[in-house]
Image (cartoon, rainbow, N blue to C red):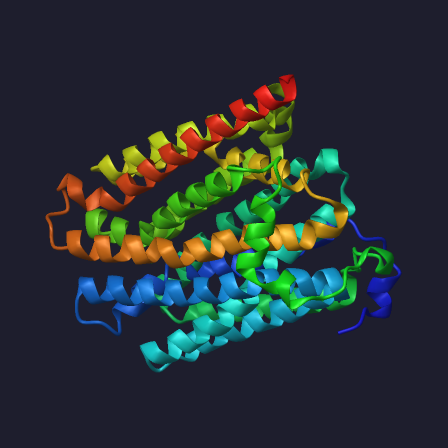
Length: 412
């Protein structure tokens, strides 16, 4: 896919990709409070609903894990724009197939397509790296996080409202948004990677395991690969079990979950779009990442213990510092590699997220299925969030050791 004349005459800048990310996440947000409920229409029990939802999330994550470094390597060779555009239209097809799915197996096929095309967020991160200086990358990743947050502000709330009318309706709307996003990209989004900075395509660069291994060999990153992986795993266990957990404990439906996820997106957008810059200047990326990991661990524990729905809202707003940990860690990792490796590096980080999308539901949904038989007030119903808290504590421990080692190495 070549650049359109309209796009080729415009200088690449961060706002272009922020719009693309926003509309992509808006579509994802539309589906979040509805997909687990839609699966319930095809299953006979809460246990089967949990298992099937886990299967659909696992397939999506497997496809993302395999394809994220591939798309990153392709974007390093052919440019960011054509890869992003192809992914947007593919994601729209995924939503349309989910809306029309006559069975769970058909939904599984749709998730395969969605996982392949949804791996393009690594390319969006590489686009941001192309158009910002090394010093400003943590801030740029924070703005991408803010675009994510804005998508999650409006997407889940709108999805919850539409889902309360018809569980298929949010998927039709998400497909339409993807089409509009693709048309925006064709007409307005310019290429960010000049031809003289492109790297030859090689299958070894597209291998997700090779990309992760290459990333872990950077001495400046070290244990941060494991820190990032544990942090993402904790987050995704929460995300993949949130809707069913709140349904089992508080009897929330799509509308109630839409409102709660609206608040999550609001906090993420404010922190990553407004507060991140001042927080980075005051604390630095190292201390900010440690503070975010600490607060996040406490929040996971409290989510699991909450006995009233209003408590979830109090924890969401009190957990605001944890939303800064991811961009701070991404900035540290990005600044440790060269300009020609940004696409593969962001692809490797996205691969970590994708493989955790496989591991998280494999841990969370079977555990949730087992505790779904318990009374709603039983503390064990929050078991998945307790696992997230433990993983976050492990990430915090490794991060503290890594940064302490780096301080000693610099001093010597």
